[in-house]
Length: 596
Image (cartoon, rainbow, N blue to C red):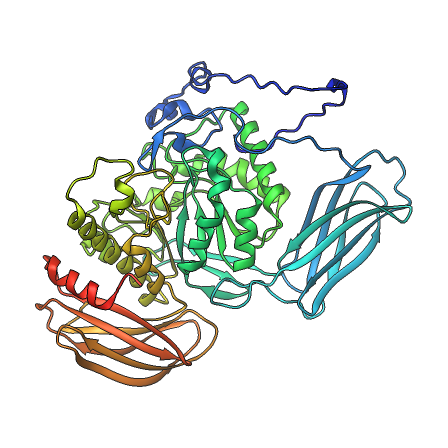
């Protein structure tokens, strides 16, 4: 399901009508014929899916129905190939100095008169060269004067070199392709905690530490043949809500170029899982060969996209069992790293999410538990109050999954559930979700430099349901969408939690520019100004502005209003502890329009 399949059809074509016949066999019956080791059975969720390279969610998931689809879900086409064409082409440009790799295919025995011409431009900077081809494969080292670098959203421009690559034979163009690539470096700074070190997990682009704020990218639709018609509206949400990173979850499919093109052009980093999730997988030779073929195909297809900043072996497979040391998993410790080593450059690789090293396994460390020392973790836990000990005391430097349920809108619910008098229930649920997601994001931002990012779950539903998504299947936005949009802004005023009778207020500047700020903090319960001041905050940091004395026993709403270099913004904070009076919250919500 995951990769393209090509067949030469020259010998089968006839004059007149031709028919393509596809024989569909039962995936589950195929799975029943396979061998199942004790290690596979040890974690038996959707056991039949282990041998089959189909999207894991389609066998049933908490976010998706069981819907084991079959057939062709992407375009089918006939291609008449040029005399010469590229079977591989890769631009690797970590800085001004770069490399161009190519492999040619086609009907050509003599390469003496064959050349490759590259013409790309990025603003006033350009990369152009014309080289002879002595063989069907080769490498060319290039240098870009005043190279423009690709940066994530908020940290600079997502500069792309765009243009064409041509193959010429005897001076005539015989093949031409459009190409784009970015100049940038990626570094994953990760180390396990020790007795004297809290450990680290952070991402640096072009040497700059990035505060990552974004969403897990899950199936666009339970029936993937409908994915393409949902791309435009879904990707517009990504940009509007202020994400600078998306994690392509391992229970999904691999997205097509349109997705990555959007991320390239909008400075959205992509953390790409290979398609395995939440279960042990076979480690026999047959499966290893399948996975090697799949990974090689995916890497070669996508490696020119600068938005892809990291490969990950799987989702939560390391976490699936305590019986086996996950560092013995040959799929994610041998097969996938070797595929990346042979076919890519400059991108880090994590074997699993969360990644349990032998060191952490031997210490008995487990993710998703209170007191966990994992530097990167998935925060699901008991799903209780979002400020409970599980969330508030978590030590993770980077959170790559966390979420909170919120009801879909009444308009959407009427489409898949018999409607009743549930308006207040829907709104209360959405308020709870919105405040939770806001809390998760803002805790990471004020936690710098100890904290380095959060990828929350999730942006958009792939079928009608009530879930952690902040936009439902019908593209109706929940309240959390608007809260997250404010919480993820490159510059924001954010409060930490109560500490010794005061509320710490931070200026979070996730940009590479110093900001001159005018701030007013108002208690809108009685419209009283609690703080007013002007200050500057340096680039790429979170700076405590004031410890605000607050009565912790009284529920109230604070509004932060600011102007940063002339750009106005606002945020809010809900003081106090549950229970929160629903009608009081509703009055404030209606008066101040938090959903805008």
